[in-house]
Image 1: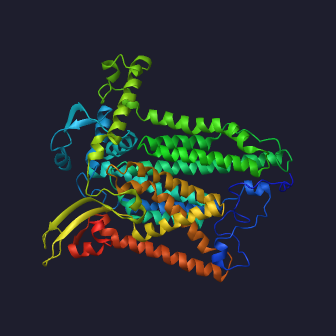
Image 2: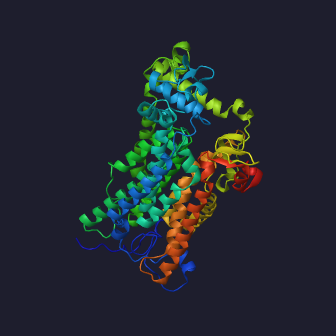
Image 3: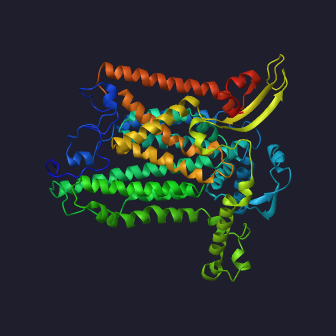
Length: 562
C-alpha cells in the first residue's frame, strides 16, 4: 500500500511537536540556531500521518541488554547485607507483623507486648487472637508475606519482596523512558539514575508499603503509554488498509479490545490496593489517555474528534481503567472477605438496620463500614492532633527539606561495635534521603518538562509532569496532619524520567560530530557526579558506623536534616 500523505487541512493535535523523523530525544541534527536555541525549538514536521502515528522503536537487542544490566546492578545493590539491621525498623513494626498474620490467619491481628524484640531474637510465636485495626489496604502486606513465606519471619524474609519490587521500579522506569524517548540510551540513563537514588534505595530495603505502590504505579503508566502506541498503530493500519489519506467523517476503528489499557487498569488497582492516594494518578492519567485518543484521531484527519471521540473512547476507557482497577482493588481483600475474624468483619450482623447491611451482602457491607473507619482515621481529629519530629511539608519534598531518620543508634563508644578508637563517639543511622544532586536537578527538570509539554507541545513530557504532580499536589490538602518525605518515592521515578529526557536533549543527535561529543561529556560527567554523590551518602543509607563528625559532614542542610 502506498504512503499516506498529510490531509489538506490538518488539525494540530496537542501532542504534535515531535522530532522530525524518529521521535527520539537524540533526534537528527538541525542547522541554524545554536544548540541551546534548538533545545527549545519546535521542530518542523515533515513526516506523513502514518509515520507520525507509527514512530519506530529503537533496537530491541540493545534495549534488553541495557535493561538487564541496569536491573542486575540495582538488584545486587539492594540485596547487599539485606538482613542488617537485624531487627524491625521504623514502620516494619506494623507491616512485617501484619504480613505474617495475614499469611497465617487471612487478616491482621494484635501481637503480645514486647513482640518486636522477641521477633528479632527469633521468637515469632507472639500473635494474639484479637483482630487489629489497620489503616492501609492489604496488597503491600500480601507481597511482604510472600517473602516471609519463602524465607521465614526474619529480616531477610520480610524485606526480600521490597528488594524485588524496588528493582522492578528501576526496570519499569527504564522501559517507560525508553518508549517515551525512543532511545535505549536515554532509558538506560533513567534506570541508572534511579538505581543510585538514595530514597529509592532505602525504601527498597525495608518492609514498608510505599515501594510496592510506586512500582505498580509506574508500571500502570508504562502500560498506558504502550496502549497509546498500540491505538495509534491501529489507526495507521486502518488508513493504510483502506487507502485513505485521512479519516474525514469517520473516526476510525473503535478498538474495543485494548489489552495494554486493561493491564494498566489492573496495575492501577494494585497500586491503590497498596495505598489509596494512587487514585489521584488513576484519575489524571485516565483523562490524559482520553486526550491522547482524541489527538490521535485528529492527527489521522477525523473531523470533530473531541465530542465524538470522547463518546466512542470514553466509556470503554472507564471500564478498562476504573472498573478493572476497582475489581483489582476488591480482589486484594479476598482473604479478609473469606475469613471471619478480621476487624469489623461482622459489622453488618451487628448493625442489621443500617442501609448498607440491608441491601448488601454481610461481608461487603462490613467492608464498606471498615473503609469508612479507615477514612475517618486518615482525616479525623486524632491524626490532625498528632505530631512527629520528622513531619515534612510537601512543599519541601522535591528539594529534600526534611528527610527522615528511619533507624538510629547514638553514642556508640570509641573502640566498641565498630567505632574507631579515640575520643569521638559514633552512630549508626538509616536515613530516607534522596541523592541530593539528583533530586535538585530533577526538580529543575520537572519545571523544564512543564515548558516542553505546555509551551512546546511535546506530549512526551506530559507523562512525568502528570505523574509527579498527581502524586505530589494532592498532599497539600492534608498539611494539617503529619506527612513524611518518604511519600515522595512515588514522585521520584517521574522526575527522574523528566531529567533523563532533558539529558537526552543535551546529549544531542547521533552522528552530530562535536555537538554529540560535547553533549556526551556533559551528560556523562553529570551521571558520574550523581553516582559519586550516592556513594558519599552510602553510609547513612546502609546503617554504617560513622564518627559523629563524619555524619555531620553529610548533613548538608544542617538542622533541617537532623
